[in-house]
Image 1 (cartoon, rainbow, N blue to C red):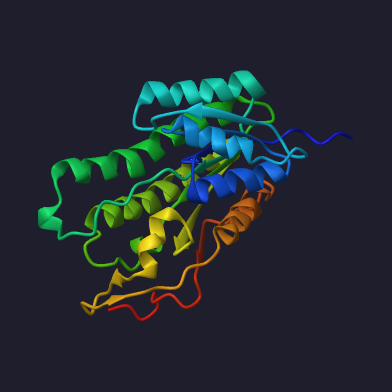
Image 2 (tube, rainbow, N blue to C red):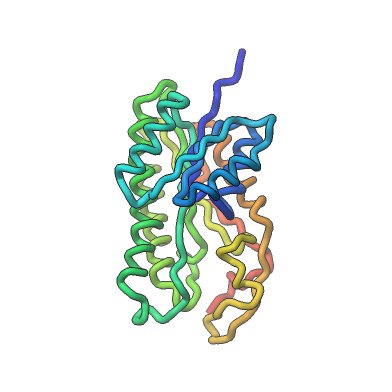
Length: 252
């Protein structure tokens, strides 16, 4: 019996963790719709795809725009007829400055991208997964260990990642009756452009600025692939993947 095609959407797929996850899913045979604001970066991701894997469709998308998100999922449905996995990855990290110096624009951008964008994509995924046959699917949200142990001067980022945890739990609960599973991956210091400052040092709770170890982003992608490939009667609600020697346990 032929294996049914598996379809995934990855947001923030133009670089970093999003690109690595998209290419890992593609190599495993998924057809992947890759979303992000930078069309050139998306084309670079698509160009790195494996010839033996699934198809890759770049779809430039501003996930803070409901119409753009609707177009992303309409493109996916029109191209493949269904959706099996959504990896809600797109996010931003505002500058590490005291909260009272953070502009309302910087705060709002974090809310709009990290939280509202994830919400909008999840809503469209749920609509599609409820109606398709076989019904159901999986939503994987990119959280952060900052939701458990924030760094100094990370109020906006940390607040959005706390909210993602609540959203993950709500999707998992509300999706049960529709065979929709939802889990979250909390990542600590994957080697991407976003964590490049780790090499020179992150501000610690002690007031010191200390370099921090990082890990290959492929370890994150492998964990996402494991979550994605579970049957829908099994779920990983939360998983943490982090550089072993980063100063996480014992912060403060």
